[in-house]
Image (cartoon, rainbow, N blue to C red; front, side, top):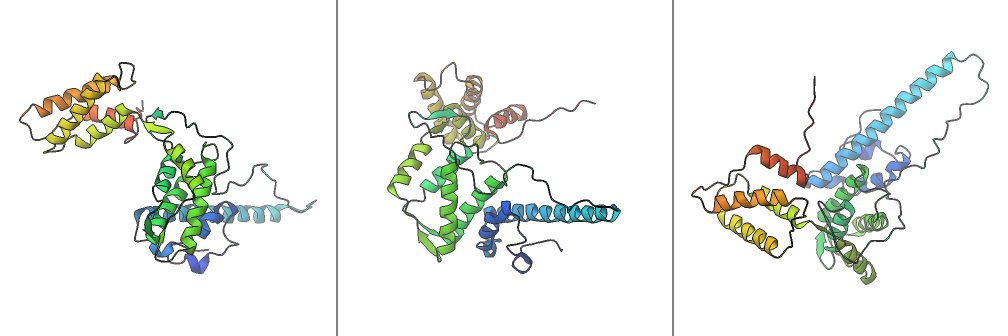
Length: 293
């Protein structure tokens, strides 16, 4: 079979051709193929899905060849070929339900939000708004891509909520016309608000992210002054304490900000080593691995 692409998908792909674990994606893809070139999230999701589908079909093709070759070598087969079960349940694109409940007492300070929490916040923020079909498809594509890449999996404490959001987006996309007003039931909305408030970005990390956005930029003294003032206030009011895991980094960026604000330089220059270290904290770059030979 020829390689499956966006242009030949509807012509080549049938329900029976798609493996069980990609069925949900198959249904979703059919409703957004026409938006492939209109949105980055949609394009990236479709490309990832097609890659997975083509890999599956190629693997299936190679296994069939091996079986045929094996059958030719057999002279006295004693039984029909029966594929062995791995004992594992097929991994559907739908996220498995979880019994765990979110902790809504106090927001937990984290370096980065749980991906599921990010999607819940994004969905919650749709309530009461009118959205075009492209926007709903883009959100769904982003969610499906995260599921395929195992960024949101069955072990996530909010997997039940993610599955519900997934199904609501799929249903909305199938039934809507050009645009739709999103109305979330009160009970669900309250639950999503609790989840959204269950985590918060550590204040020191939030300030580090803002500092990175100013690094090596020109004409940003006003922004640098505001950030410096906010950091000083956070330190004075103990919102950032001596025990904060990134207190040393906060002291370092505070010095950069102070020097820049009180200089004649138009550009806030940050050395590459410091910037890379800060980006590792925020997850903007991967840690480098040293290979010894």
